[in-house]
Image 1 (tube, rainbow, N blue to C red):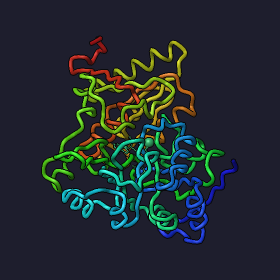
Image 2: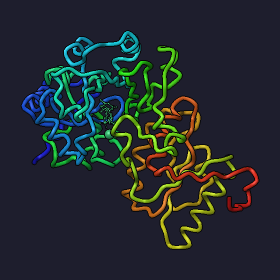
Image 3: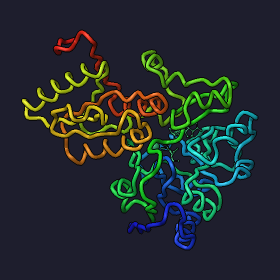
Image 4: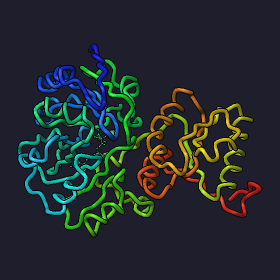
Length: 361
Ligand code: TXA
Ligand code: MG
């Protein structure tokens, strides 16, 4: 399949250009498009054939449900059985924006879209291109992140082209995304709202709006140890993993820098190419062959925005072994660490104060 690539202005997209993309989706085809979180791979959410095509294009297991994207709040009524008052309140504060909510679905949502679940995930993105395209496509776009299954989510059109060129009818290039991590997912089908995937809208913000909020036990380290599976099917899969093994090194700054330098020197001595993900404060202290600066510790938004691109860069550089500082910052830390831990397959090395001479733990 020949993939058509069109460029649009992110803030003021030309409707005539998007009209063609809307027609493609209405006709059962696929178009990738920018949102404020990551690029999405869009198809008609109410057409089971479109959802099947999305799974095929991504190489994604078909029991992993898709998020239905809407552009207007009223579009929620026909696709969900009931809207709990807490969900309505959250929508008022956070939609349009980087928030997905889970509801009981109506018959209108095909099982192919919901991965066979009786529930549906719904998001109203704020990106002008996404909002215009949803309206031009009939109001309901099913869109997973526009990456091949298992790869980091795309934050630029180039990432989408790398993964999906030849597999979809159209890719809309609206420039780099703003947030860089996928939306926060909150489940409203239980008594107390539950966070299934952390994102830009964090636990504290949700607690301020909703009062009591739970964290899916499958997301925490304790849950993992006890073998609790995350409720969102997509959070169970191996994800974002770079081709080279990645280890997160955690501890006081000096100890982390010294240990990473030791490890990358050992790797270099064996003829391996080692890479490091470093914050701007420490990047100059590393000796590894490839050091990627993810952003300043004082600028969490930049750290979140750069993570997926750096994971992809290391793949194209064909590195053999990777290390990262911990990126557990105050506001976005839970979301960033959730993705970084998945990318590392939960490989974490803790170094301590008394470890300055590189003594083994
Ligand atoms: O920011 C985002 O949410 C992006 C953009 C494109 O909107 N989309 C996205 O979609 O990240 P995807 O398919 O890559 O991730 C959706 C996640 C998966 O982990 C999936 O299992 C979960 O949402 N999910 C979808 N429907 C669900 C449901 N009914 N119950 C539980 N989890 C659900
Ligand atoms: Mg995804």
